[in-house]
Image (cartoon, rainbow, N blue to C red; front, side):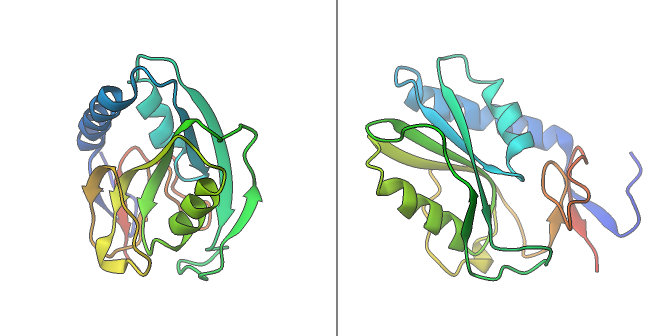
Length: 175
């Protein structure tokens, strides 16, 4: 596979696939009888979430929320806004938030607090990637894929100015 100029593969598509299978097994163990509501955070999580739900063989429902804190920058502004809210009722549901990457924790802490106020039966977080070195706000990740270094990452749904989401692996954007 050729890498595009300025991009270095960090996590291969093969490693991503095995990580998704492992996470799905963990989630299946905990949610099989619960008809959970999975909430994806757009736009980054859609590739991961699509692969994840195809590995789950029990009833579930999906919804999506769109939040913003980055705009067109590679650095978070720290100010989180809901751009697209949920359509599903959360009260008394088993809710699993599906996220591509946990960075500073600001966006996820905002969303988890927002969802807690809606009184779900349970609320957990599944994240494909985690950058613990960047954390500003504590966030508990219940189902974690891979810890990654403090680099700007693209591919497998992650973007830089809406580019590179379609790459089949996770790559480091060398600046």
